[in-house]
Length: 163
Image (cartoon, rainbow, N blue to C red; front, side, top):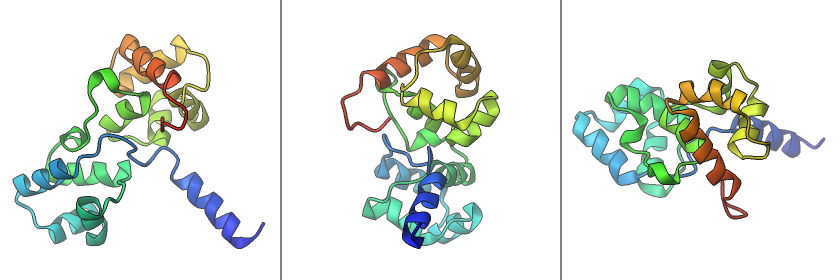
């Protein structure tokens, strides 16, 4: 395999379930930083993130990954939902996961499932499973019914819409 292909495949594996695809609000992000009264450089240092990353998320349309966004939320003393908002009646399973500041890997470990199972579940590429939902729902802080509604929205989302 050519080096560029191997690198691209490795990069894709690392980013599975990490990007916040929906609901990130730059204005709310900036407001949370301002309300905390912390400088960008201190925030970057305390969250172990480069200042350029924070700048990108604030200004340039960068898409945050949930791990670093959760670290920033922790430093600011807020929940991830302070700057990631998707209305309850529009939430997909990945949105519920992002609300908790979890990657697919972290959710899978906490629920005792494989990352492959969690990924397929979020994409609604597998049949609805009450057994899986009963493991995932408590970790996500929702009821099995709420998770089923989110899964159903993922199942019926238009082609090309990120899960």
